Length: 241
Ligand SMILES: [Zn+2]
Image (tube, rainbow, N blue to C red; front, side, top):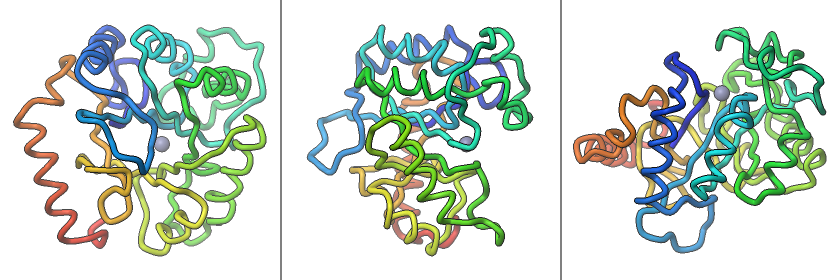
């Protein structure tokens, strides 16, 4: 699954529905971190992109309450060590200009990331250094892929094994380069994976933003749609991404 904020816009979930969604997951699935070991039945991996402060403020307490594990994909360029800003000002931004406002600590700080990482229920992964489209000519793949990983590892004293492509953008060259540094890479995709090798080497995620009810995303009809997409993608490869 892929999620972003708590809130009311398209990249968000309203907190009340989201809590019921997590409660449903806790009763019906086993949440886990990426692994190449055999998966339990009904395994699910929750991935939150970008690392907004609202993850720490609202979602992390719910993960603890329902005993769920989640990955948080962060971009080191915008992460502060610590902050004295109050919660209201940190939550006060429009989705589209939050990168510009990062000095207001709109993202989780390293102090918060460290606390969550140490809890054992949140694993921090990389979402590139600056959230740049990796297909653009002036992108430094070394900076976006390797430097981001090294910075997070050094700051949090942990291992970073997963990478989420910014905007879901990659090609074969980017994928090959990514897999030199990471064990797992994630895109958006709306497909289901039978294991953490993904589909053609990339793990597809179901868009879990803007849920209208706690569990309809897992309906028979939706699961059929995700499985159909998985089947088509496994046939055509990565060339349409
Ligand atoms: Zn992102």
